[in-house]
Image (spheres, each protein chain N blue to C red):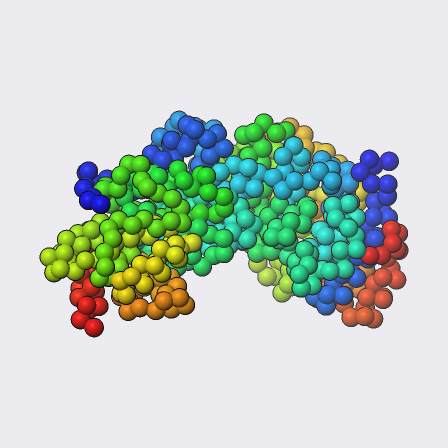
Amino acid sequence: MNPKTPHSIPDLTSQIRRDIIRMVTAAKSGHVGGSLGSTDFLTVLFTEFLDQDPAQWRRDGQNMDMFFLSIGHISPLFYSLLARMGYFPVKELASFRNLGSRLQGHPSVENGLPGVHVASGSLGQGLSVACGAALSKRLTGDPHRVYVLMGDGESEEGQVWEAAMFAAHHKITNLTAITDWNGQQIDGPVNEIGGVGDLNAKWTAFGWRVLECDGHNPDDIRKAYRLAAEPGEKPVMILMHTNMGHGVDFMTGSHKWHGKAPSAEQEALALAQLKETLGDF
Amino acid sequence: MTMTNTGNKDTRSGFGAGLYELGTINPNVVALCADLIGSLKMEKFAESFPERFFQSGIAEANMMGVAAGMAVTGKIPFAGTFAEFATGRVYDQLRQSVCYSQANVKIAASHAGITLGEDGATHQTMEDIALARALPHMTVINPCDYNQTRLATLAAANWEGPLYLRFGRPSVPNFTPVDGPFEIGKAWMIQPGEDLTILATGHLVWEALEALKILAQKRIRAELINIHTISPLDEKAIIESARKTGAVITAEEHLVTGGLGEAVAGLLARHNPVPMRMVAMEEGFGQSGTPRELMDLYGLNAAGIVAKASELRLR
């Protein structure tokens, strides 16, 4: 039994995927594809690895692990996971993208939403911020770890590689970076759009320890997080192989669901594939 | 108040001195630099506090993000590079990771303005005040000499929130008292007068002092106020002075577009419109030359201020 949640991973991920579909359908906008694809490995991170007590969460991250979401557009997943883990009330998910909501289209710190350290949405910036937080922890003697989630399309941004060089040069080893390698971006398959190519070879060449993992297999995910946290001389990148839209058959594996809201009929079709385990918001 | 030049010094050295002092008194102060340690006079901090200094290489966007991460976790980072790279090159990083994220980052922006000189227009930003003051939550400070830059650096560490500190390369008169006064957001009355108001910032403050002497010979009693903090403006001091004198000149080393002059014009248009003139670069990019040649070419000098004063008096 996990001390942080009484629920099993399958129960949690099924409910979170329902939340994602329902939030984006209600808001008539938002990003379902990447949210569904990252659900499994991010749920395992928050429930079994991230050393944080939701009730004690602080924006300055003192004496706790920190998580940075560089790909701010998968906010539906981030918000649902935070709510289901107890960072804020589940019913607040109904306010996603509404006027005055703490659940902005992309994460914001302006209204003090627990779980959000910095704003994100404009891509390419999260790894740099995570490097700063990790260096700060090292300076303070705080042994906790810093996690950051990035996207494969995001790695077309030049700043990602500035940060990659910086992290290796400064031997930032209290950092686990994760790339959701789903192979899709807004305009099409990543390798047809930006030529990202072999991410393993690239990160290895930049001086990182690189792990690859099936991002939908909880045991494989656990193994990767454990290996990443082992002492070493290099920063660690986990390349998570996922399918965009995973969990809903007609959304799986296509860039067409990167940033599109389902219709009412599509919502019903999707929800029929996802068991309501913890009660809808 | 009589101001005497105690010897020419560069404002960047005032930053370097202030940063080193901060290192000795505040363990939360850290510094980052994008391959310009010597240019920004950060050597003493880097050598004295190596564990708190982070060489960032020629990668300014990453440096601003790293600084944001440090700030969120309780450090007070000073991120140093040239003003052009501290604004134009990293605007989105300042916007999202620093300002929108309410990260307590101090941007140390050196070699600002035309007085960067011989390197030419690629490095002479005359737009940075406009860019910085357009950002919500960003405090913008442009000190006028070595002493004031040192005091501004010390004050920046105690100021909560993103702050853009703009200073320069050349040696210029050091004339403000070593202990100020300097308070962020509070305009400094250097010389009261009745006939017109001169609001000067940065290197133009010394030029304005020179202009006062010439104006006095013409029996024009000008009021000189140092606006070191461009955002937030000391609205009360500016409105009061405009009410008293009925005419305002602004003086800055920046383009007209978006600079101190337009900030003051916007303020006075809402509260107390008076005839105004702006001493600033009118348009376009700069060019190579010595700082003095360039200041004179673009009228960013005492003569330029006197000429604008004459225009106002002839109305």
